[in-house]
Image (cartoon, rainbow, N blue to C red; front, side):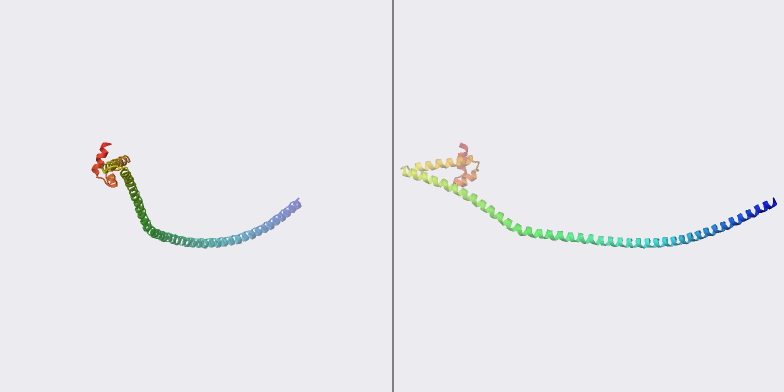
Length: 196
């Protein structure tokens, strides 16, 4: 029995030695893994620091580019505004010059048109007066050829004049206009207008 206990104790010692050796191996393996992890962690920290530095550098470059773009945009906007102002002033100057050049001939043309219209109106009035005079002359010549006396001719002319005055009054002409067109006094026109 002592032999059995002894052999059991030897076996237990062997088992403990084997377990200790195995534990030592595992610890050294763990130390190796921890050392590798520490190295990888330090490499990751270095990489992180490099990335942070690169990001800061890139951010600074972007800020610089943004400031440059803002300056360029401001300069471009000022140039566009200045250019638009110059173009607007130039266009207004051209329009003013063209208007001045066109206004003179247009005003002259309008004056000529008014003058021609007045001439046409005067010519029409003169034609009407001449037509009435021709008609009166023809009537007077007919009466003279028919052997009428001067008194009859004068009476006929007077009756004709009254008819003309009545016709012009019916058209709505003023007494001054009728008097000047027919060559009679305004008083005579008023007398005829009072008999209508």
